Image 1 (cartoon, rainbow, N blue to C red):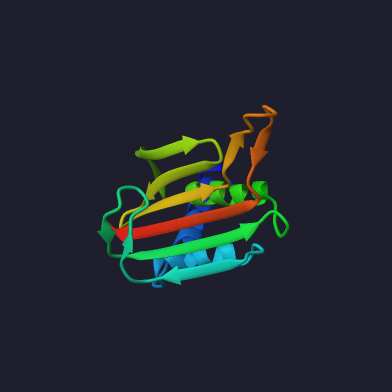
Image 2 (cartoon, rainbow, N blue to C red; image 1 turned 90 degrees about the vertical axis):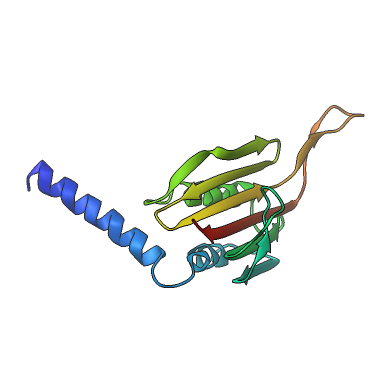
Length: 148
Protein backbone atom coordinates (compact mmCIF):
# COMPACT_ATOMS: atom_id res chain seq x y z
CA UNK A 1 0.00 0.00 0.00
CA UNK A 2 1.44 3.36 -0.98
CA UNK A 3 2.11 6.07 1.60
CA UNK A 4 -0.54 8.32 0.01
CA UNK A 5 -3.23 5.63 0.33
CA UNK A 6 -2.22 4.96 3.95
CA UNK A 7 -2.47 8.67 4.72
CA UNK A 8 -5.91 8.96 3.06
CA UNK A 9 -7.14 5.89 4.95
CA UNK A 10 -5.96 7.33 8.27
CA UNK A 11 -7.57 10.72 7.52
CA UNK A 12 -10.86 8.99 6.62
CA UNK A 13 -10.82 7.00 9.87
CA UNK A 14 -10.24 10.18 11.90
CA UNK A 15 -13.13 11.94 10.17
CA UNK A 16 -15.37 8.89 10.65
CA UNK A 17 -14.43 8.75 14.35
CA UNK A 18 -15.28 12.43 14.77
CA UNK A 19 -18.59 12.14 12.90
CA UNK A 20 -19.59 9.14 15.01
CA UNK A 21 -18.65 10.96 18.21
CA UNK A 22 -20.54 14.11 17.27
CA UNK A 23 -23.32 12.90 15.00
CA UNK A 24 -26.92 13.98 15.26
CA UNK A 25 -26.95 13.53 19.05
CA UNK A 26 -26.35 16.52 21.25
CA UNK A 27 -22.66 17.35 21.21
CA UNK A 28 -22.66 16.77 24.98
CA UNK A 29 -23.80 13.17 24.54
CA UNK A 30 -20.28 12.25 23.43
CA UNK A 31 -18.76 13.75 26.58
CA UNK A 32 -21.46 12.22 28.79
CA UNK A 33 -20.98 8.72 27.36
CA UNK A 34 -17.21 8.98 27.79
CA UNK A 35 -17.48 10.12 31.41
CA UNK A 36 -20.06 7.43 32.12
CA UNK A 37 -17.19 4.94 31.79
CA UNK A 38 -15.40 6.48 34.80
CA UNK A 39 -16.50 5.79 38.39
CA UNK A 40 -18.47 8.78 39.69
CA UNK A 41 -20.64 10.06 42.49
CA UNK A 42 -22.70 12.26 40.17
CA UNK A 43 -23.03 12.64 36.40
CA UNK A 44 -25.62 14.91 34.79
CA UNK A 45 -26.39 16.22 31.33
CA UNK A 46 -28.40 19.40 30.84
CA UNK A 47 -29.60 20.20 27.30
CA UNK A 48 -31.01 23.62 28.17
CA UNK A 49 -29.40 26.94 28.94
CA UNK A 50 -26.61 27.20 31.53
CA UNK A 51 -24.39 29.79 33.22
CA UNK A 52 -20.98 29.90 31.53
CA UNK A 53 -18.03 28.91 33.71
CA UNK A 54 -15.96 31.39 31.71
CA UNK A 55 -17.90 34.64 32.12
CA UNK A 56 -21.15 33.88 33.97
CA UNK A 57 -23.36 34.64 30.96
CA UNK A 58 -26.45 32.53 30.32
CA UNK A 59 -25.88 30.48 27.13
CA UNK A 60 -27.99 28.09 25.06
CA UNK A 61 -26.51 24.65 24.50
CA UNK A 62 -25.69 21.76 26.77
CA UNK A 63 -23.69 21.02 29.89
CA UNK A 64 -22.26 17.85 31.42
CA UNK A 65 -21.17 17.81 35.08
CA UNK A 66 -19.05 14.93 36.39
CA UNK A 67 -18.19 14.55 40.08
CA UNK A 68 -16.15 11.86 41.76
CA UNK A 69 -13.84 11.11 44.66
CA UNK A 70 -10.29 9.75 44.98
CA UNK A 71 -11.70 6.69 46.76
CA UNK A 72 -13.46 5.74 43.49
CA UNK A 73 -11.07 6.88 40.75
CA UNK A 74 -7.64 8.50 40.65
CA UNK A 75 -7.48 12.17 39.82
CA UNK A 76 -4.87 11.41 37.16
CA UNK A 77 -7.28 9.06 35.35
CA UNK A 78 -9.92 11.80 35.20
CA UNK A 79 -7.27 14.31 34.07
CA UNK A 80 -6.27 11.88 31.28
CA UNK A 81 -9.90 11.94 30.10
CA UNK A 82 -9.82 15.76 30.19
CA UNK A 83 -6.67 15.66 28.01
CA UNK A 84 -8.39 13.25 25.63
CA UNK A 85 -11.37 15.61 25.28
CA UNK A 86 -9.28 18.67 24.45
CA UNK A 87 -7.37 16.72 21.79
CA UNK A 88 -10.40 15.12 20.09
CA UNK A 89 -9.92 14.87 16.30
CA UNK A 90 -11.86 17.56 14.47
CA UNK A 91 -11.67 20.04 17.36
CA UNK A 92 -9.19 22.89 17.83
CA UNK A 93 -8.01 24.41 21.09
CA UNK A 94 -8.88 28.10 21.39
CA UNK A 95 -5.79 29.69 22.92
CA UNK A 96 -7.77 32.72 24.11
CA UNK A 97 -10.00 30.35 26.16
CA UNK A 98 -7.37 28.65 28.31
CA UNK A 99 -6.79 29.06 32.04
CA UNK A 100 -4.56 26.88 34.20
CA UNK A 101 -3.84 26.89 37.90
CA UNK A 102 -2.94 24.60 40.75
CA UNK A 103 -5.47 21.80 40.70
CA UNK A 104 -7.62 23.06 37.84
CA UNK A 105 -7.60 23.70 34.10
CA UNK A 106 -10.12 25.20 31.70
CA UNK A 107 -9.73 24.85 27.94
CA UNK A 108 -11.97 26.03 25.12
CA UNK A 109 -12.25 23.88 22.00
CA UNK A 110 -14.28 24.37 18.84
CA UNK A 111 -15.22 22.64 15.63
CA UNK A 112 -17.21 23.89 12.64
CA UNK A 113 -20.47 24.17 14.58
CA UNK A 114 -19.78 24.24 18.31
CA UNK A 115 -17.65 25.80 20.99
CA UNK A 116 -17.07 23.92 24.24
CA UNK A 117 -15.41 24.85 27.52
CA UNK A 118 -14.00 21.95 29.50
CA UNK A 119 -13.00 22.44 33.12
CA UNK A 120 -11.22 19.84 35.24
CA UNK A 121 -10.60 20.48 38.92
CA UNK A 122 -9.07 18.71 41.88
CA UNK A 123 -8.06 21.64 44.02
CA UNK A 124 -4.53 21.77 45.41
CA UNK A 125 -2.73 24.03 47.90
CA UNK A 126 0.30 24.34 50.17
CA UNK A 127 -0.46 23.76 53.85
CA UNK A 128 0.73 26.94 55.63
CA UNK A 129 1.75 25.13 58.82
CA UNK A 130 3.55 22.11 57.37
CA UNK A 131 4.49 23.62 53.96
CA UNK A 132 3.33 20.34 52.40
CA UNK A 133 1.45 20.02 49.11
CA UNK A 134 -2.18 19.03 49.67
CA UNK A 135 -4.81 17.98 47.19
CA UNK A 136 -8.55 17.63 47.56
CA UNK A 137 -10.08 14.18 47.22
CA UNK A 138 -13.01 15.75 45.30
CA UNK A 139 -12.75 15.62 41.50
CA UNK A 140 -14.97 17.53 39.09
CA UNK A 141 -15.22 18.05 35.34
CA UNK A 142 -17.64 20.41 33.62
CA UNK A 143 -18.22 20.45 29.86
CA UNK A 144 -20.28 23.31 28.43
CA UNK A 145 -21.06 23.51 24.71
CA UNK A 146 -22.97 26.03 22.64
CA UNK A 147 -23.43 26.65 18.92
CA UNK A 148 -20.96 29.07 17.36
